Structures are given as C-alpha cells and as structure tokens.
Amino acid sequence: MTKEQLLTMVSDRYDELQALNKINNFYDYEKEFENIWKELGQSVFEKNLSETSADRRKKNSNPVWGDKY
Image (cartoon, rainbow, N blue to C red; front, side, top):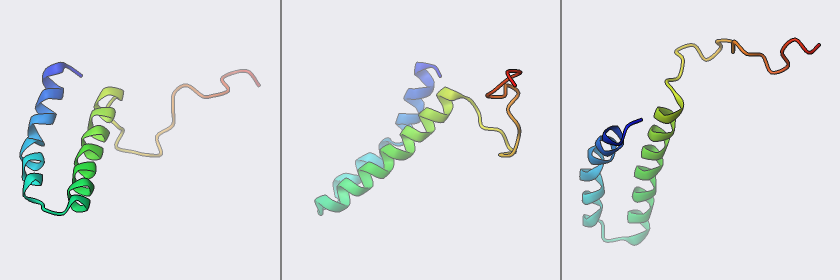
C-alpha cells in the first residue's frame, strides 16, 4: 500500500467524520467514531496483506507440516 492509497482511503471517510460533529450525545458520537475507524482499519489491514481470494475454501499452496510426515 502506498501513502497515496492510504490518504485516499482516509479522505473518503472525512465527510463521515465531520458529520459526527452534529451528534450531541457523546455515547453515540463515540460509537459512530469507533465504527468508522474499525472499518477503515480493516480496509487498511486487508489492503496491506493482500487481496482475499474469492473462494474461501481454496487450499494454501504451502501446507503447515510440509513433507515432514
């Protein structure tokens, strides 16, 4: 992931973060703030690791035990 990609992802969420200023209840503010950052963090994490495969059952090419047994 490049710095530009990260900044783009954060700037896409900027309007949502600014909309939080209209919330008067601190509990609701905190809950929405946390949700936004959780989703953003998950997106960044997935982007840094790699793209996920379409088939969740796809086998890994490198088995854990290898040819040991």
